Length: 376
Ligand code: F6P
Image 1: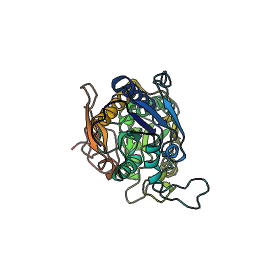
Image 2 (image 1 turned 60 degrees about the horizontal axis):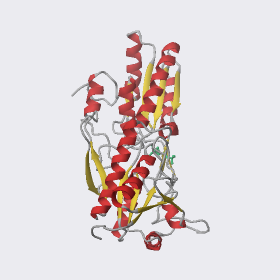
Image 3 (image 1 turned 180 degrees about the vertical axis):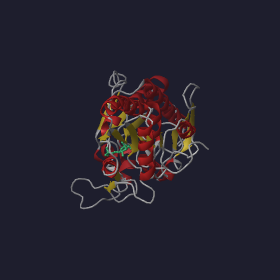
């Protein structure tokens, strides 16, 4: 499909779990389509479920008014709907609904579709594009683990929420001389744990990329004790695991990414409680990290990415997602780049072991308990 001129109609949907900033993208897609290009916009509800079951709303300048500060997504999301293997009510088992997606676009006269989602949704989008669906992607996740973009909206809000929790836990941990474990989200990537751990001044950060040693955690707690610091804050990513051990998750579907992580904090608490004199407690922040009003940075990022997605459609750049490259502090202007959807389909973007934030944390004495020296 070539350049889109004239009056056109596009669709938008939010797949996967929600993330703060989704409404900023929906608003930006709508405003850009209407104001810059003179197009109309239809929003499918609950991700691909809305496409399959034909649930949608008209998106207008009026309907997106006031949604910028709101968390979640005004369209609803679904992270259980893969149109290539979906069990609709009444289906005895999952079946392929990809042809329905094409039919639905034709039925509504849609010239293009904006698919907003994480790596799972981008993988689905890539396959649909291969079948001829004219679409572009906008990566989203609090986990910051989508390949092809250095940053996703939602991450900053989650990191701020976790940092605030670590600040609060510091005062009570110190008062009670406790070891406090904070389990955070992130699936197989340690971005949230690393960034919030550094920002919140954690003593130990455990991430999936660096298998940890229980002995080293105990030694760190003992060393702090000897220095007169009778409390320790440990941030553990939900996907972290001890060396030689497995991450703790529940497999909730046949695909590799259909895993529900959780439990490593409590496991760690039990292991430590048996072997150290201090009381050890665990806090699981869970979905608090996905909720709440997006930070200014996430609203800005969502707006930039939403507008860029419509520009991609206008240029007929099908099969790409909006990638953003950012410097560490985000002070330089963001560079927005089209990234082929094959890229996020290659699996999650993990924390490189030589990453600047990881190096800084090590150099400052934060323990990763992975056997590596403090600083390279
Ligand atoms: O991908 C975002 C995320 O919040 C992960 O950090 C977490 O493992 C997962 O989603 C939880 O998903 P659900 O809400 O479906 O349990």
